[in-house]
Length: 151
Image 1 (tube, helix red, strand yellow):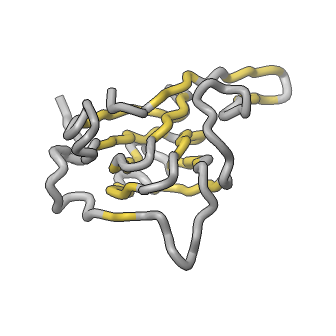
Image 2 (cartoon, rainbow, N blue to C red):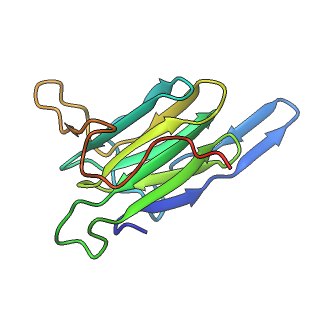
């Protein structure tokens, strides 16, 4: 696994009224700090990638649908330099994936319905000076192919 990446298997607690799922707690081993919470959606087959943050750590959870989350480590001083990780998370695999600063990441909605993703980053989004550095999802030097593989 890419150095600094952590995962937390999430537990869904159902009862007669519905479900509850804790995502991130201040007493979790992987908790760093709180910046903000936001929700984003991705339509089926759409790729939202690649980007990295220089300061921010992301805590990503898909609460509806399924996504394929990919990461690439471009940090030359990292023991996992040029390593790629891939996780499937969402309704059928409730998982929190923590993406450390300096690691490119993005996802593709692989479910037939829109995916709803919640992120709990460690920093507040700065509209005047965003900590976000982007690459084209398909035209780049990252050794990853977003195309669906049938078989």
